[in-house]
Length: 443
Image (cartoon, rainbow, N blue to C red):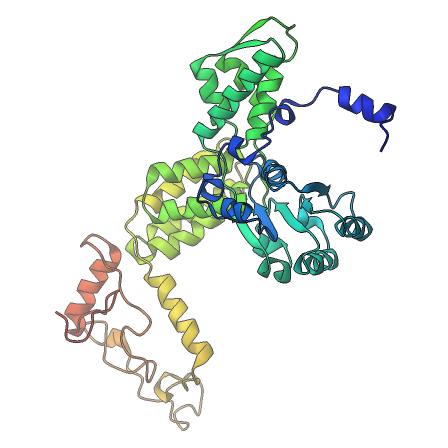
């Protein structure tokens, strides 16, 4: 196609720094060595010339587009880029027609925005080998793409860049600015630490921040970047937080597992990440409330009281004070002894109720507070409070054996559950079933 005034103007327009230093080959890529290293699975597919359909998923700024372009370069294929915002089935058909005469690699960014019908149309073209396809998405493919496309694709998860990766990216950009723009940049140690540490593993974000910091000076200038300057740039562009995406669910999962794992510092770190990202304090408090029973439970009954009070408090107190309330409750869950017996027990009981025949209510447990109940046989219930021990031997659920659902997690003599175990063993003369249950014949 003959160049026109518009294409010439586009060529002359300054490119963003991220586009200027985009690697052209796989060897130039920084990061993602788990799939692109010498023996990485994606690298092996490229080396063998058998790409097929590949789905890259991960957060923004981890190199999905860059990897696709570098693979096209490596495999010497014509590169065609489509995007759901501007492409439809007719555009896909046009590329498919072109692929009859050329070896084409199609790249589709944000493929999750294509409809199911469009994804199915793509699937037919890739299955017949019309072209190789690399698709990119920030969502989990198993959640956002059609099962048919997922089942026929090779799926590779890209990780956020490490601090070492991002430092290499910054150093490469500084070298390019020196050689191409005659800008000599000095990053103070604290500035480098903040620049890469606040980027959230996003190379594009760190490059955009660096570009903002060096805009303005004439060629030949020396630019010194301080930590305070980096702080100002990042204050203007907070980290993104998708409350429906993997980042949200992964972060709350890490927070929950840190509480369950009794690591107070990790708990506070993930809590701070959630708060910094603008997560609703009521959502966080509800998660803490659940885990007060799920993970602490009978080991410390006051944990549920603390969590319930925290939920009430954050409904009346907003940030920043709410973060103290959330920290208080989260640390109670974290520092408390743990028992999973309530969660495990109700889960086992629910499974039994759903899968087994219904157990009739024994006559002695049926309602006897009306005239005629005795004539129906609703008698012989023994009132535990009439016994000096506060307990009598009688059947409450015929066929259900001790320990079938509830198995104590009593650990240490100071927990409520351990004290209760000792009490009931003295009263009943029977050992309390424990978790995990002992094997028959073990001592």
